[in-house]
Length: 126
Image (cartoon, rainbow, N blue to C red; front, side):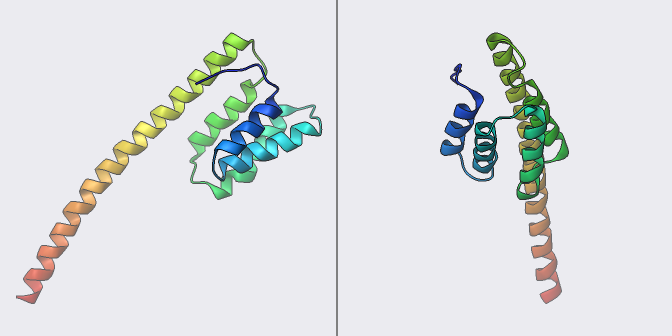
């Protein structure tokens, strides 16, 4: 991951051009709103998070991480900001790992259930 000292609106515009919807929409709207001039970035960030929430499958814990990330943007020195970004990545990675574990558990359960239903159907036929 590379870090730069560009203005947030430039970074958001670049991110919006390299991602897919709804992430693209979030960062495109943020870039557009920042071009108009903003006095309270945290409020704008939270409004945009709330705007994309219905279009995503993000859980409340994931949205909280995103809100906290937005509150830290531009509030720290360059080095501290890098640490905040790394911390956010770690939090999201932990949530991703938990989701993968749940997927694996439910996948195994569905396979077992499918076999049992198949055996049940065969027993009913004969």
